[in-house]
Image (cartoon, rainbow, N blue to C red):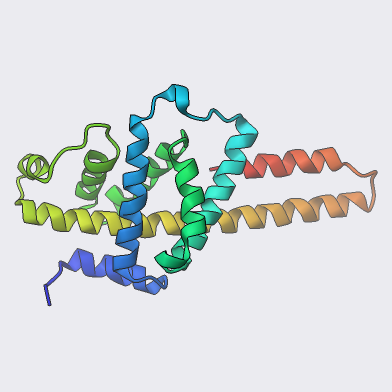
Length: 207
């Protein structure tokens, strides 16, 4: 059995503690990153432009599809993957979320800066570089870069999953608090349905 680095063991343990096989996290995240990168080749003219309501709905839909897709075996998640693929190339907001998670990775784990650079160079630039090029830039062997890329992909995948879980939980709590507030309000005042809608829309518009 091939030996793995201490960092990779920690990342694997994080995947397992969340109920996932590390290999599955790696394969799925790589698939999504490659699909996202392929969208760079599509002219802006052919991309769908959404208004603020459309973006809000897209964020909610994609987050929930991603969470469901992660929880299912790859062979059973075609429905969710298809919907994610349809939206992924048009997500003008997705890059800011990936960058935020990568910044957290860079500051939160040994070699996090390296992981961030690897993901950026391979998947977030229209002209991705080869293993040999990044190996020279990082003064590492190509075999080491390949291992680090695997670690980076897994860590990004499980980090994006945790972020999505947190947003779903926070959004649910905020919705419940807003709903309780307006139910209490209705007991003493005339119904303010439009006010309730506005507050909920403000909650749902967050990343």
